[in-house]
Image (cartoon, rainbow over all chains, first blue to last red; front, side):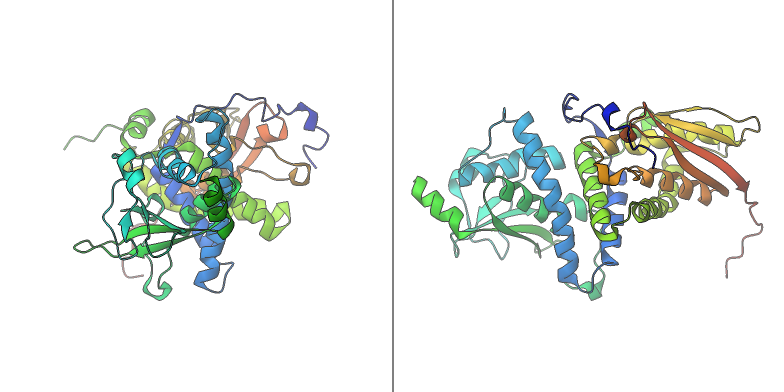
Amino acid sequence: MIGVGKIKQYTNVLDKPLSKGKQEVSLSAFAFLFSEMVQYNQTQVDNIAELERRLEDAGYAVGARVLELLCHREKGNRRETRLLGILSFVHSTVWKVLFGKALEIGCGGTLVRRVLMEESDRCQVADSLEKGTEHEDEYMISEKELLVNRFISIPKDMGTFNCGAFVAGIVRGVLDSAGFPAVVTAHFVPVEGQLRPRTTILIKFAEEVLRREARLG
Amino acid sequence: MAPVAPRSGDVIFASVERVNAELFTLTYGAIVRQLITDLEEVEEVNKQLDQMGYNIGIRLIDEFLAKSNVSRCVDFKETAEVIAKVGFKMFLGVTASVTNWDAEGTCCSLILEDNPLVDFVELPDTCQGLYYCNILSGVVRGALEMVSMKTEVTWLRDMLRGDDAFELQVKLLKQVPEEYPYKDDE
């Protein structure tokens, strides 16, 4: 096999200076790649739930690495340990780096009951992090048009399938790796007067996270 | 109407919508990892990546032609230059250089010094046979096939395998003559 016995020659990837993260590729390059990923995964599954799970898994792998990368580069090797801290890290830092903008203020969809006051006060520009009042452990991230859904139209027979599952996976990857296990799902929420529904990413934290949060006061 | 001047890769890249390269890199990494888990054999992974690239290439050529205003290349040499300077630049934001031409002018190498696919990547011992960037060779092959050129695209050097650059050999197998007139009703 080519390459065997050459391992010593490699510059260790950790020896390389960390890039500033300013490099870009064209949106189409990403869209083409993402489309291939979805198409490939379609060949590996029997149903929509499985397809979403596979996209979520792929996203999870991205999220885990994004957390590591951004904590190192943007946060001076520190990571958030409190619930609101990590949520704001997700919707401001992570979103800004990955999708080029922090989240915008969104109006409530059917899932959303109340805007979380502390958060929206603090980041007027950058917010659409909302909390469902029915359940203490649920938070939502809502976006008008998710980057990954830009060029996607869902065939009728695929029902509620949402490619945002990939982004939900990224969010879960970040949260889980930071010690905030959660179930994260992506949903379409129709908006009145608009052709395309917005995507809401629903975060439901595990019980232990809320217990710890209560203990910390 | 005067013919529109071809646009340089830099100009096009500056004018198109762009995304963070890390999102792209990590997403690609996630795909490769999925393939390795699913297919187990690195040979199969290489094949699947090439196939995905081919699928991309046959669609990407449309966007390339629409945005670049490139007219018909007179020979394969010009084609290679256009891929390296315009094609790579407009999609990946990096340029390649073209070298190692054979005497007939049908085989050359594209050298990539910067490759956004491989940031953060290190091949573990178990994946030594993997051509990590095999998707790129598929893209080039697919795109060229859509402009009537059958090619064979192979990796000669790969930095992940300890080489000093990425070298992609593009070999023109044959030029498929276009058929006129096109039949619309087929």
